Image (cartoon, rainbow, N blue to C red; front, side):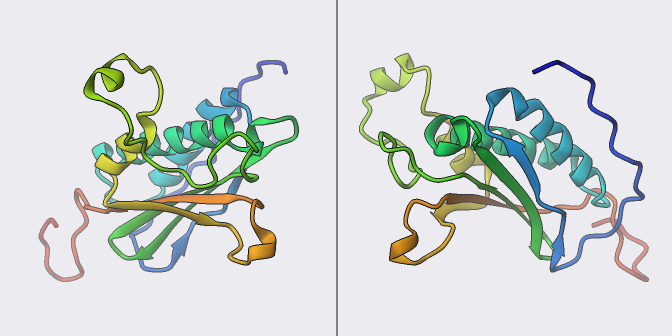
Length: 181
């Protein structure tokens, strides 16, 4: 795959947060090399949200990067022709919801993402992998995973890993208050 600069996202005026907001879903090939594009696109989408604290934007981007890497490493998304879908929405006016959807579990991988609890303190210190979900657990307000389709005969079609973040505005003032939230 040739390395070609990605075109910059068009400039958009930031808009205030509101319940029910959805950004367009983005689909990526399941290659770890796409992680930079995932981060760049997410930053561009978050830039369109008025008053978003830069620290929260960095936190959401970090979690998305971990979720994308897990989808590539542990699911069919990381195999030839695999895909990963990233969604971003606001189920409530002050909640951001990030989701990553993979192509389904590999035979050798666990079916549901979970934090490994079977390690000793020494094993955690020596391990070079397995901290992504732990990181998400500490940074997100809440997170979890579920099957893409919740029917027994559809098992293995894909897993959604989601994380919610409490949105705190840096300089958004409610109508008529003249103050900063």
